[in-house]
Image (cartoon, rainbow, N blue to C red; front, side):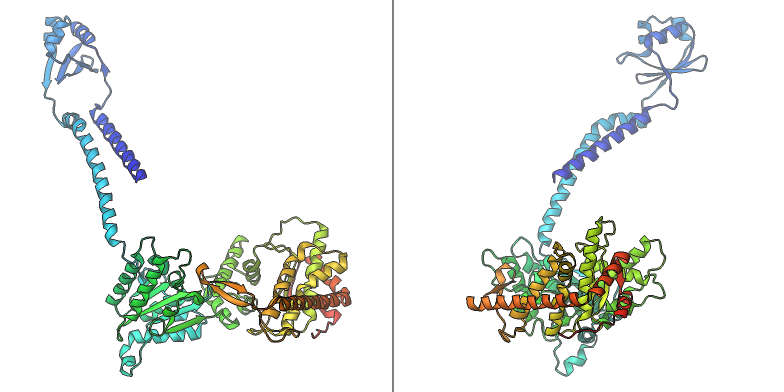
Length: 612
């Protein structure tokens, strides 16, 4: 408010100065004239140099016999002749001068009277008008505060359809039924079917929940209202419930329609979380959502679609039948889906004709749709940065590592000793991985720093797998110790470069014992009770449900698994030192070994994978 007041004052002063400047311009004559005093005018009249004098109020316009012009002013209370006589003008000389009298009128006259009088009143009036307008807008906001900020889908510039959503076949099939119901409700109602009132889209961030909702809007061709759940909640009590009522009322009036609530976990968290000062307004908003969804009539053609990446924290009443009847899970894409997603995001990108998107899909397990879109964009940026018109296969492969680890830091200065240590460290990882039958194939080995990593060994499976065996876990553990064992054997010392490997190995070994039941000594048991701390946002905490004696056995078993993996990596490094030296030398020379180069380097050694 204070800032607005000073802004109004500033513009008022600017307006005043503009009017004053305009007035001064209008009051000026076309050509500048010499100004004479009354004494000077009398002297020129007595000398016979004045031809004509024009009187306009107190202003005198003088024309000299040579054609020159001048100005003067007479006394305010007296006439011209009286003023001239007072200053000793010669009457005979005055008779030779042509005198003309004009009335003071026109624009300059009225401006001279009106501007000093009306301008201050205008400025005061404008200031009062601005103040009243602001107060009225504040009063009107009080009445619209409980209105939901619903947005219609038409605001989107790019409409989407199911064909624009690659993969997610089962999810699209579920939503196609929703679209068909909105288009042909009679077909379902006649047979006695009840279409789900709510559809909950669940999946990790970036899996395409919002995109899929947009595709539903594009396919259904009905009003599609969308809002974020966080917009329901305000600091004032009752506003969230009021906005919820308004949102559902708006959707019902436009039926058949779809109401999309994004990030519903913002208000849908489990109730009873008020320990230590819970957000009562959020709970009241959730209660209103439950009432609105339960109050739908059987033939109501309004469907609520909600999206969340935290289904585990949602209130159970929100998920019961009659509210969100249908839950659609959006998984991370498999290799075929990733290839299809890459093709979608390749539209509009200038790619080289030799680009193989299947090869990119192989190297991106665990990538979401958003990650793949970012990957394609990074490849295009990389090509443009290097002044190339087309993005190549190498640009795409570089972008994978940039998304995972960060950009290359080739300018990072390291000594020859550090470079050699890093080369043997990564060679140890790669050698152990290629030596074990249950390890994933090595895709790339590099000693170029990326992000916080001094070097990296990229190993990825050729086939998708959602289950992992104990042998695979042991192979992963041994591979993690490959760099540690290599450093110790070659240099007789260890560095901090293996700290992250040791951390990951320790965590994985403890999971094998406490969560996956893969310990031969302790048997197929899990240890530790997972507790959901609702009042802390339902975060996951672990509670010990075993004795100190069992805890000691768990520690012993974890230590044993880690040590066995270490000994396996050490054995491979010691028995295949020539291979280790060959990989390290190649890394020191080339810094990076791709999949083909790496396995071509190993071919002369005729390595046979070992079984665990």
